[in-house]
Image 1 (cartoon, rainbow, N blue to C red):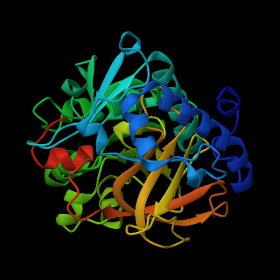
Image 2 (cartoon, one colour):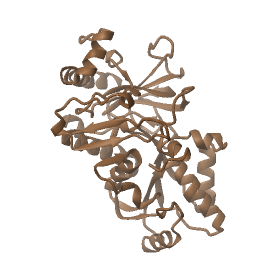
Image 3 (cartoon, rainbow, N blue to C red):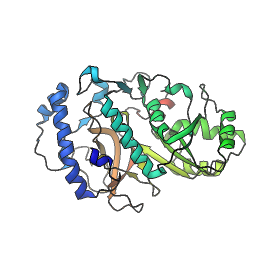
Image 4 (spheres, rainbow, N blue to C red):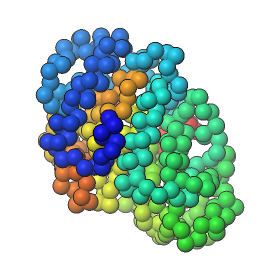
Length: 358
């Protein structure tokens, strides 16, 4: 892993990535096989071949298993942090158990990936959420963990919303006055940004110049799509309301924190050298061809303390290409089409929209 941390996060083409990462994924699989009994039982049942020759041969488990079982591959006393996925009322949240090395690796990968899109220099940061969401440091929600993870890119951090989720105009105006003419970072979760920030700005009738901002957002589109809000509409409304144009969606999950997929200027989500994405046919589970829709499988080299390195999600997507995106980044690039039929809400934005605040 140390070698990978020294490399450009999108610098490996298909063949190089396969050669460098396959041995690492095999070692990680063997580690979890030896140290997590429940994971071992799964692999014994499916008959995993330790001699697999491609990344597509690395076994995967359904992401939903983390809602049903406590899965970890290190001694309990080594666990320093537990991340809980967002869930609506009546749902069981996933619990992800982190040791020091896994947590540190997540932050190093996140820094490298996001820095490739927004730059490595820290910027004044406007968090499009409320302060209360990060107060419980021992039991993070995905939403709180996301804010704290991205805070490493920011200085002079300010929260745009009050704890009752009302827009804090005084803080917003003070932030923009203090950093007028400077580039600044904005981070939050999609539906919260839409409902509590953008719509409130539009209602206010005031114009705030956010043209120097760069926004990173994520956490689900299900609720916005039900309200007929597309990605294009989201971007257009921000451009018209406050001049903000530099917007990057990110796709990720509590079960693989750190290995996020960020949207480039061409509108594509990219897999870094720390991760991989495979789309599988929903009936046969064979890998799909370029452009073919299927179930998204996500892989990450970061999970050492729990067997989350190869997961079958509940999302539908399609790989759009590899090594040839016009943005210049190597590796696969893809799109998220939506949630699978009957899949639970998962994104922070979606679960918040269903009545949960973190």
